[in-house]
Image (cartoon, rainbow, N blue to C red):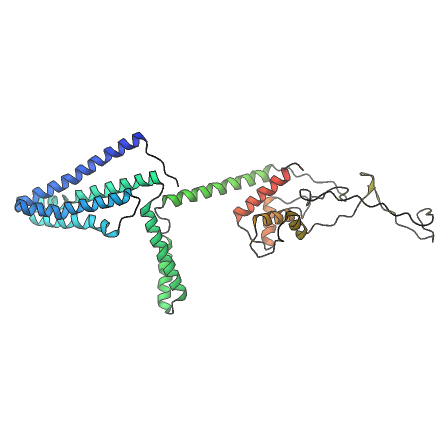
Amino acid sequence: MTGRPLTGAQKVVLGLAFVPMLATGAAGGFGTFSNIKGAYDSGTALGAVAAGEGATAVLALVMLGLTMLGQSSPAVVRAGLWALPAAASVMSAVAAPDGPRTVIYAITPMGMSVSAEGMAFLARRIVVHTDGRDAEAEAKAAAVVQALAYHRARAANHPDKRIRKRSDRASWRLARKIGTGDTALGTQLLNVQRERITTGADVALGDMFAITVTPPPGPVTGGRDAVTAAVTPALPPAPEPAPAEGSVTGGRDGEDTQVNTPTPDFTTGGVTPAVTPVTLDQLAAIAGVDTPLIGEPLTDEQIVVVLRFLRYSADPPLSYRQTVAAFRESGFTGGESRIRGAWATLMAQEESPR
């Protein structure tokens, strides 16, 4: 997630949004001073406002400064933003002369808390927008991951069975909190999902519109076979048969033994050579990679070799789904996204001019 600068209109709107927040906090402090002054003297009222709204304003400025610097606020600061006005609310309620005004006196100091929380939240969003990172979310995610690692280790290795069970349950509760409120993580997951959908759509359309040409029956002659067409040279022509000693008459040799003459290939005008099936080892050697082994992690190049080998193991060649099914059934390992990428590479190699 990358940051973006604020536009002129955004700066104006956000600046105007801070004005009512400041006014609400100031009004809450003045109201608390007036309420307590009616029951006590001015000094007592001023001290109450300083201990309640004044201290709240200090904590609000601390949290605002840390947010603008891209740092997370300590938990004690967040707790103080509500604990101090709550104490001022109790004090104001005690100073109320009658029941109806008790409620008004009690909620007046909370204006400072709402003002401080609102300004800090807005400043945090501005930092996330401009810097591309959320310090609060990162701090929470780090704490959750650290606690999860501790509980997983304790659930696996602690000698007490009851403690292992408690840690196992705690780790599942913590697992639900991972990524909560992390906008950067959400953006990255969306990008991954978009890439997978794009790859899947490309493969599906390729399978739908691919034209499979079935070759005529008969041996492969004088050229490259289907498996090695993209990576191997043409088969050499059959060697000329050595002239036999003595005359050959009517298909028999000098000892009157019948000789099986090679079957002529009327297509190429020569003798049809025998075609040896290409093995997976040979394809890997041609591609310049180690032979893919079942059950072991494969590189992207090795996955392409395996897919090529499996695709042309049948006539006509297998489709993507059939090849993937054969890949799984053979015991090879590889993620779905890597297999799709290897298939796209294989299709690009087949479509490239040879």
